[in-house]
Image (cartoon, rainbow, N blue to C red):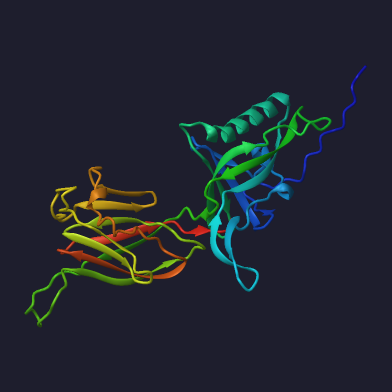
Length: 322
């Protein structure tokens, strides 16, 4: 006796590259890049799968855990707000012209997400792109949900999965880095054409703007010549110095063109050949400070600087929402 099944109804789907409405953030397109670097469109019906936007959640502001102290006059006072990992719920509808094509797509997508849990591969990247060309990304790990919905008529040539994606860092990141460079002025003669003094010590005070919603941790690149490098955050008083002649390094002054890279998250100091120069920082006083949202008043000081001396920092703004 033949089994009568209800026909599979394909939900309304977007065309290729068309922004779709997503809860909490408005119109956007979405892609997922798996740990191998393969990019999977998530809002393009022609790919054979697309997002069921009505079920998407977790794209808004990061969750926080609040620590408070009781107040003697009643109530409490906030002591600390700790951002917590977020979970993004992302429903996908997968289809094919027949069962074999559907199954191939279903299996490939399942592998693309679950491989984030392999020890040697790491997270994937979910990207939200706006019609104006701006993008925000977040690193994701598969948590659960790649199971069929077991509805009547499904898993023949279509089915849907409701993925839970776990994000260890709850903030969204602009993939386009911002770089600021300050260079030493060209030294000039004291007498030609007029009495002049050119500093060989200070690149100067400057204001750095972080357009994001939370603190960023920049990467610094110092180019010699320089004998001592000091970075000071004037608003907080935090600072750190690098001495290329420190006993833990024994290199001597940076010569023209020689470079050192300082990462503030994770902390590291590397000479251009990869040597570890972490011992050249002025521990225990050193604080590898970050940039708060908005304007930051900072100063770069290079003793022994000259033509070609420069400092550059690079960071990616981080945001609460997609």
